[in-house]
Image (cartoon, rainbow, N blue to C red; front, top):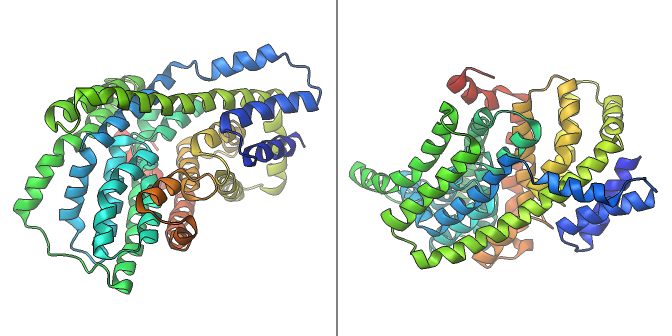
Length: 430
């Protein structure tokens, strides 16, 4: 089967250490040469360009830039302060504060890496003072940071909307309830850890006056997702226009309200956002080339036939989908994995009358787990560096956190109203 050959060659090249962009291109060229397929290399180049041409993809670098601004501009500091006065009194309170901070900051940044880095740099020293083991702190940060991908400004949701053609307006709210459930599940692990180790028995409850003071200071930061998502809900602007507004708003509050960054800091922030955006868009283009080959060679048809032979019911298909994405995510980052697999799985899901919004949530939840699984895990390595922890030491603490997230994933998969309840309440669809 051509599918097995393509993925086999890709994994061999990727595991050899070649950058993902080159792995995708080399796989495509290798298959064309190895199978003596009669395709001109001009076609590959044109599909590479076509992969990054859609207008909606302008939103990706803009949201990345907005996330960089807010990560450097003191927004994370104020969100952590708010989470601390609300939840710091609980056993394992600083762990819960970390999770809630990641959830709230994720609603602003839409990036798991930015979430882990921004919140981690603020909470890691305090957690060390409270007696949390660095390995546990790093494990918690690597997992909690991925909650950003289920929040309304999620970049993977934006990409899925582009690939599938579903409404970003509806999709943006479909991950909120599963994201909150994940946060609650992770908090249970933190409370248990705090009680078991005795490292954090909580602190005194904050007074209403203190809560109001901190909330008022964090208010402008938390207002950003309300403005952006509210504009998309109401139809006032498109996701691409929303990304532009996010940049303007991020500049305004970081430069003029909080004043945590200066004009001289902007070139470095722009350069960092440019480097990240270039990497993402190159991978999107390269994935477009491979996706074109998969389509031209009717790989989706072959895969659909195979899955239908072993999964005749929707629940069986969803089970296989989860297993396949969890395994794939070990080797590939979420965005390219989604771009690679969505063209294959979406037609099969449609044939089985599976809701596309549910598919988006399932794919993002699966692929977010990849960010804290070696060898590729992005948040895993960011958190390890921040906390000076070892990957081996983190692994045993990641297991219970991962079990919680995988449990919520399967609950969301087979209880689809969890992803539909908020869009139904807001838009009357679902």
